[in-house]
Length: 286
Image (cartoon, rainbow, N blue to C red; front, side, top):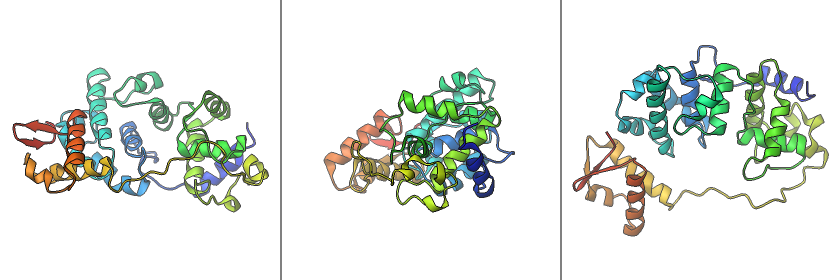
């Protein structure tokens, strides 16, 4: 065992948040839905949508039987609504290929629409107890600091990161280790103002021992939203989510003043399959 295991697991046993997708009653589908929703979205925003989603569609087959537009509408304001379409497409694939049961292997999960390396590893680990290196932003930051001695990991996961993470996966309860490191990054080893004084592995942390040297890699991009195409897309999509059926172009024009940006955003929504043009009107997909 790594000397990181005992302190991290002990800390997690005491400080883990009670989240619906972590409890023993959570189904693999509940775990899968949470992983799609949590991508670039805080837990606080996901919780009510996750609950409502599973109430409406408690199984992949239930979602697969619904129009994809219903999934987009139920996604609400979580952001990055293409995730709703991908989750719907995955539900269809699970229903058609796997008898309505979320597959338990990384390879089968990876073959589903919208399921990448991280998501496949996370579902296999958290839902089925498989031993995988689950490398989300929080995990990568913890390992970069504690083991590599750098404030932040590279922009994209590297082979060295994957090898390091895999070498730390314990034989017993690997899924607990995966979520424990993730929780440590979310609550203590945060990107801004990390609470090193509360960290269970402060004594082993290479970054802290080095005096917390500042990041020297490529500048980290700050996410912006106001005035962006993404914000414009959100405004347009909100009109369609709230509408009973399709809407006129005038209804969409009224929510964004810049006609060039509005046209570009609307065209991208149509290209992504989130919006369908029906004659001179627009609506969510069927």
